Length: 354
Image 1: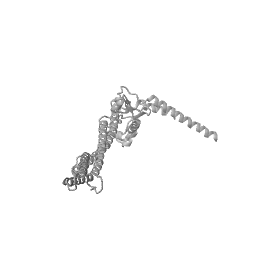
Image 2: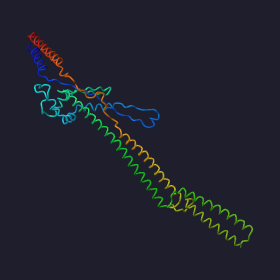
Image 3: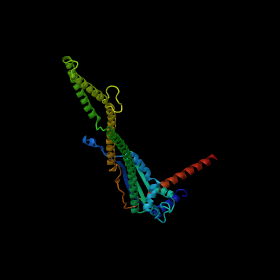
C-alpha cells in the first residue's frame, strides 16, 4: 500500500489532473549531394543521380542536439515562453528563465531525434503544449538545418573557386612573363622569327657559294687560255676573294666555322628564341588548363551541390497524444513493484540470517 499503490495513485492523479496535454510535430529530412556529370559523360550516356552524404548527415545529427541550434530557435521563437505555458505542471513544463544549459536539457526531453545511419534519414519529433508551437519549432529546426547545410556547401564552393582562382592567377603571371621575354628578344635583336631569318641567310650563303664556283671555273679557264698578264685574270681573282670573304662573313653569322662572335651568331639567337618560344607555349597550355578548371569551378558554384531534402514536412497535430499517461503509469507501477519486491526479499534474507 505505501510503496506501490499510494505512489502509483499519486502519479496517476498528477498525470490525469495536473499534466498538461502535449502536441507533437514530426519533420523528416536527409542531406542530398548532387553529382553533376561532365559533357563527355553526358554524350556517352553516363550520368550519376544525386545521393545522400552520410558525413554531412552525421554533422547535421550532432547539430540538431547542439546548444547553438537551441539558442538560435530560442531567439526566434522564445522557447522559454513556449515550454513554460502550463501553470500547474512543474514536471513537464520549463521553469523560466533558467540558463542555456537548462534549456538544452529540456530540449533533450521534448525533442527526439531518430537517425537511420544506413539510409541517412533523420526524423525529428517535437513536443509542445499547443499544436502550433510544436509545428513552429519543427519548422525552425528544418530551416536552421537547411541554412547550416547551405553554409557547408558555400564553404566547399568558395574553397574550390579560391584554389582554381589562385592557379589561374599564377598561370596568367607565367604567360605574361613568357610573352614579355619574347617581346624583349625581338626588340633587342630586331628579329620577329630567327628561323625565317636563318633560312634567308642560308639561301644567301648558297647563292654566294654558287657564284664562287662560277668565278673559280672562269678563273681556271682564263689561266689555261690567257697569258699571265691578262687583266681579266686579276679581275677574276679579285672577284673570287670578295666572294670568299662574304661567304666567311655569312658563315660566321650562321655560327659556322671559327672566330664567330658568340653573342651575334644566328645559331645562338635561334637557340635562345626556341627556348623562349617553348616557355611561352608551355605557359599558354598551363593558362588554358587553369582557365578551364576555373570555369568548371565557377559552373559548379552556380548550383547547390548539397541541399536538405524533406521527405516529411512539419506536421500539425489535431489532438494531443502526449504525455502517454497509461504507459507512464504502467511503467511507474512496475518499477515501484519491483523495487518493493527487491526490498522485501532483502529484508527476509537478512531476517533469516539472524
